[in-house]
Length: 426
Ligand code: UD1
Image (cartoon, rainbow, N blue to C red; front, top):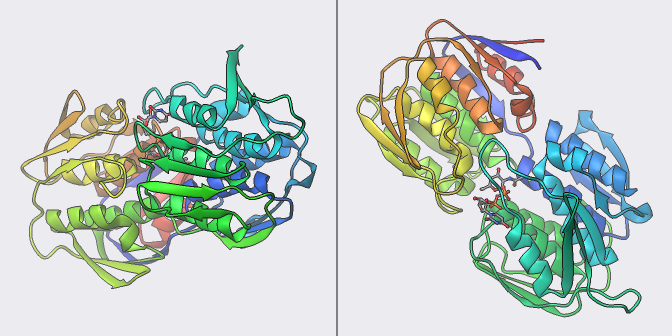
């Protein structure tokens, strides 16, 4: 499965460039199904999850040409003739269910494996399904699959526009229903939607194909259905979670680290939390951030994860590593996923002093971590372990690194170029 071996204690400095956003690229690839013409996507990150989404599209019958060197993929959706996302792929990556909205909208039918739980908790899809139902679909669950189709015997019948109210601003549900609305008959209004910048990126992409999606980025999205969508050429936005990871790495053990393609406005809450700790972080311009050596001792703080614009759950394990070495007591509260503290036992094996109480982590800062063999539990927890290894005394071995490779492009190479002593071993 591979591991990273890190000799901690090196100072990071220099420039690092953030790649395309995983959580946008995956959705844009899925949304390409809606088009009648060729899609060109640029700035696509070279990560495992993108490879899985490409596999899903190929299984459906789409033509996909990847040019990883130039970070471009071309998708030809013309020959899609299969409407099933199989368990082998959905099991590997839950985001595969994002093909459901586009398939249902364009072809009136989809069969998708139920994703099941993962290492950050049980993850329902009830809100996705309720939205489809509100738009005139019906579904049944059989043998681990959801069969969903437009509830009409008329040939070529489409979903119809509807008012959909989400109980929680789920990103996946927002995206699936937004894509479903694009080729529906009439207007769809989705209330209480997710507002992440990646949602806006998806809306911009859909509109560049000829869709009519309005107000993305607010808590209510309006979609006026159109007859068909055309091909487009689109650049994926930069990855704010990767940016947050490198900013935190620099806060842990950096001096003069410039993070290029880091849009601080996508990371505002995180940015101000790091400032509150005392990280010497400054905005160079809209797309670039610099972290210098700390000017004073770091302070403990409290953090609560929430849907955007709240503190991102994906940066919760990352900031916890930083707080684990800040003297005093910090409290981190996880409000989005019920099981996202599994990595804490690993961090405690490195000398951290963190106790979990329900959905709170009570962190007593220890000043210094010590290197140890630890596991990755998921993409962000795995990256957090690497950050812990960078700051720890001695050697840390992070195993199960395929989790990290699902979401971080060339993670160890980028850290090495900043001066980290990190090696990938098979
Ligand atoms: C996306 C991101 C993930 C991030 C998460 C929250 C991708 C590929 N993944 O995941 O990195 O951590 O947003 O920012 O973009 N829920 C329901 N019913 C539903 C849907 C969701 O109860 O139908 C619950 C989930 O169990 C979870 C919460 O809502 O507790 C948030 O889930 P959601 O926003 O849908 O996350 P994802 O889109 O799966």
